[in-house]
Image (cartoon, rainbow, N blue to C red; front, top):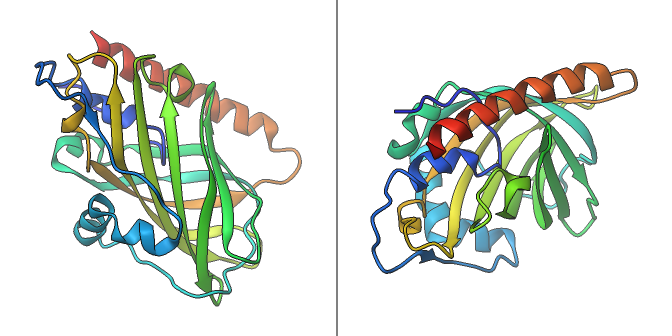
Length: 236
């Protein structure tokens, strides 16, 4: 069995281990749920609700979250996961996170980058107060840009909660990433097997200032190398 050596907040490459573990044709290669028009919609989604109950990730409600727009380097690790993804536990979280377009009405966009791989979500939500926040985000992923085969697409929901400190960093961030939709044009992939899978992570987000590009590039190159190793092992 492949041991996962690097983790991501949104990137569905984590799910490849389970998605391609079963190549049995079952006549149904689509698993679909959709539509999030408020933070409550996220919480009420059955897959999200179940994962939150199992993981214990906190949710900070309120209409006065701190301003978070900026670029961050995330440093942490996967701390819990669905049984099918238990090998992900302990994998380091090291990626570049961009939060943008935060509005007074509680909207925010999210992007994650690791080397050449990039995943994002737009029109997400943010709640919180007293420096604490929860972000609710949906990311639709497909193709090599997200580390997936061309015939596979997935939707990953990200919920993350933490606290902004005086220097702009985000400390003690707890988050969970949940697969809520999975599709493939290839019926040999058992996509029903991945719906509802989740991984929980804990990390600190370090706000990036000038003169950090070199260190960021080294981290991204290391992560890309690890990603390629995982993909090569899984796809054999």
